[in-house]
Amino acid sequence: MNKMDDAQKQAFLNAMRMQENKDESSKGEDVTVSSTVSTDKVETAEDKKETSTERINGLLHRLYDELATLQSYRSDEYTKESWMNFYQAYAYALSVYEMPKPTEHELTEAMDKLTKAKNQLVSH
Image 1 (tube, helix red, strand yellow):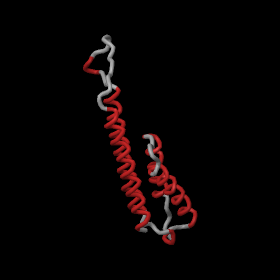
Image 2 (tube, helix red, strand yellow):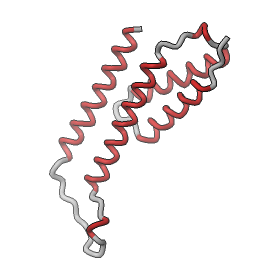
Image 3 (cartoon, one colour):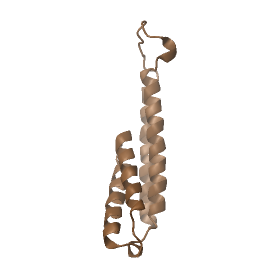
Image 4 (tube, one colour):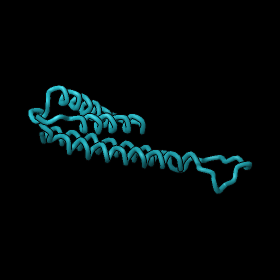
């Protein structure tokens, strides 16, 4: 169980480092804004990227926390059918979490599937 936890932590740290490196390398980019657009409503490409990055980092944190919590669940406590559904959702969520650059959609989908499968677990 500790191996899985260490692997999850490492994958999480790697994802965070990659995101930070991406953010650092994109600083200083020039953004051109059309003069016909009101400047108080203009969101530069860099602003959108930071917002997207913040959302992705938040989803990564939530998914990590959920995976870490669910890691302690035991198959012998649930019906075989509900466990298999849960296990598939867990494996999928873990694979998305370990992706080098998961998208917001992929993270949301993984979290949704995992939450649904967890809520559908049936105890013996």
